Length: 628
Ligand code: G3I
Image 1: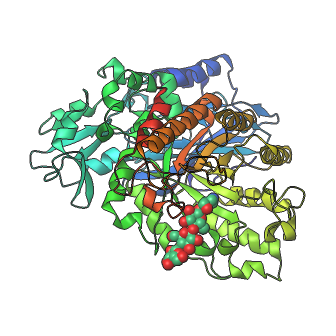
Image 2: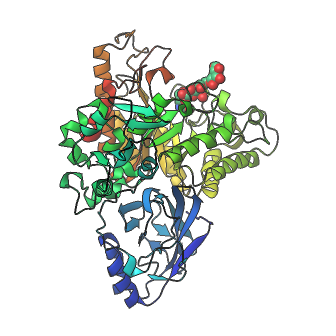
Image 3: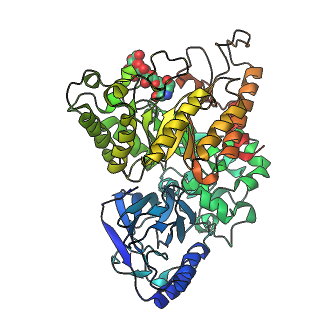
């Protein structure tokens, strides 16, 4: 698969291998030392050009890609490269397994380890610029060669002597874009003190006396809540202690907050707030973290994205205008999905009109607040989401659909971490109109299953670095629909279609599907080397399809407790079934019960109640993450 980024880049080429070895050994940490050692034993082993490019840059951060192009005449099977920043720090990455915390090392995933002669593989990342400009460091590794042929004078990593020899597991104080954004917030008390909330700095509230608050258009943490956090967190600053208290180098960080290199490795891909949070094992032993809803932070407990669906644009309850939503969002989540406004009809209302303003505002909001974006959805059959012009299109349908996919994917390239490329193409088990197991949509009628292949190919061409998902519901059932989904992804992979993962929507009932079937369904996808993402999780308390099930007309204590346990079990099943490198994350389909698409049933399927108060379900989710 050629996931190549054509943006401006700087390329490494082979040079003096002794120099390379010395340079690398002096400058890189343990992870990249492995690559250096390999290089020393394989002089002139360079077989690829390795380039680092910036695709987008804004005040506090940037996105980019590292591209490895096979310049030899034989296939590359597996790759391992490294790089190091002077000022910037990585906040997330995708399409590679990244370890370290400056220097960084990256290795291939199962599907992108082979690079045929002349072909390229790219993986993407986001950096926090930490007050500097976007750097373009040298990419090193045995397949790249180690010398630098093109090093920009102003923005590249410095020569070896200027690079620190920090351990690859050293924790960087402000490796989070959230940290920088937060530390620039002007609403802290005059003392200059702030709250170090598991590695992210927030302003201390001026008027809010307990819990989280929202003042001067920013989330803040009350002094009482902040001071109750375990060391080294809590109130910092008011002098030089700010820097020292958040500079969690591996040598200064207490062992309870120093993640193992493996936990750091798997943390890349979620926000850095989570990567510098305590490892799950240390959280497990810290009952003070999990026992209080006020101090709980889901994202701090996970080394993969924890997302939530939000409304924006002209929808009621836009997250952009709701301080209550934002307060919950910033405390618990590091990824968002537009519940509606990035769907087909919103983005492409007429053949010649693309409408990006509302989605742009939401994506900008996410980036400004250190959140990544999982985008939903490029193609969805649902009648009211298919633009009217597409339903009766009489021209070249594939050409029209290609324009649709590529215009949207290109617009958001570098700004979203992943896409639901095709949503709900597989027929329900009971669908009498199904064709070959597929939903008889306008897309299937016009192109057969090829619409799915082409959608991924087109999306990949327009955005070579975003993770590309097939997304569906009732596929976590381990039944006939799951089998049809697995057959689809097997076919896509066999045909070389660039799919990265499968999204399980997971709008589940209190008693269906069974945890065993959910786990088996996750496992089946993971065993195919694909990422697994829970994309739209909600857990109803009523099962209206089962006449013998209890009927709740309000969220009773018993119903809430059962729901919490269901959340715990689902999250635990995800962790058991999906290897760390393949965890695309877990997204909840809404913040608070009143927002849920099941609100009028009535049901109460989310983590916060109608007053934005945390429900037992929140603790259940957290307990699933921590293994309690
Ligand atoms: O914003 C308009 C509002 O202006 C108008 O007055 C009102 C009147 O009906 O409608 C509002 O829009 C509604 C919107 O939800 C709320 O913002 C739409 O009619 C309604 O169709 C839309 O429903 C959404 C549904 O998808 C259809 O797009 C739900 O919120 C959303 O939760 C649901 O999400 C889907 C996923 O995309 C795919 N998987 C299943 C999931 C649940 O159905």
